[in-house]
Length: 289
Length: 136
Image (cartoon, rainbow over all chains, first blue to last red; front, side, top):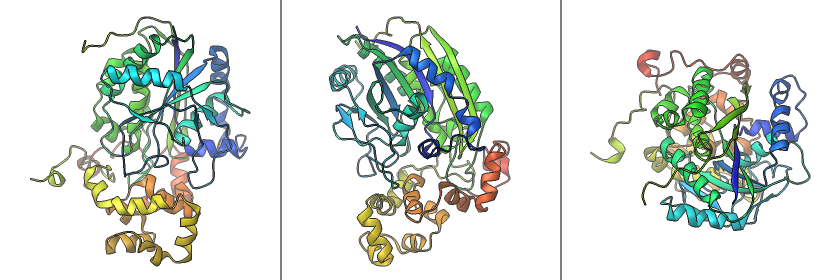
């Protein structure tokens, strides 16, 4: 039986990727942020997942307004790095796990989560920046990666509660997989930020930390937060934080917070990093059967 | 009452243009023009003759002018989405924070300084009632 060993919550700020790629991590602006990463990298090295399921959003790279899936699951063995207008990020190719993906597809859809299935999907900074944050510079990523794309660009994104329940369904799916993979689930994006309009630059660290506290200790309360509260308190683009609920839903009730760090600013964003170790437990049964 | 006329609970958040169906409908061609700039050949064609390139897209006269004049806030008001219209900014060689500063109406340095000092405070910025009626 495959098992979920933990979860990572991680912002996916494009400027972090650019600073990392261009070797600017020691500059005064970036150093305080990058100095917070070594404990996270040591942790994931020790946890050694075989597969990372990365819940992220596409930023008008692979998808655009012609077609807007709410939840899309990558089922390929390989995902190219997107060119977001500056050339591809110089990071290793993302190799998938097609067999696990198709198991997830079957399990999730029969579990009433109507995923869009995607064979060809370039992955943008939403997915690759968290990999750089957690693994640093690599010749190749030390794990297989299963991308789950969530629409958060076109309002409305799925509710926090729906994301939380998708996470629970992912746990059921992973635990029913016949392989022996150790799986880490990433929720990415956030924390508070707004990058458009006259209110651009909004940061609300107090709200963010209250959100993280609830996410760890009382995730059902976090899952009940309505969209209006994210938009108002965490900035219009802070609504990405619903993706952290997919990660938390995939974990059991028995988690330990292994590490938390945050930093203002990384470009326009309160940057957050949260590592949760899962002590195991059965999946929550599906409610519809 | 049509969908587009329904009031939204988030309409009172100041300086914020939630990219809902109303804006997506209005800005579809503007945003898809921006999307086309992901392709280097299209960027070259656009730079060579901006007006002629824009003829490929059924834009409103206002959207066309906002693009040609690089009026970022106006693009937002005409249905543009930041993830799309920043592709035009990138094509022009602008940093993200330059485009953000333009929407706020401050210089890039003022914007960067605000972020370095912790960003824009939530206090006074939750709703237009709280902020004394600033538009958004």
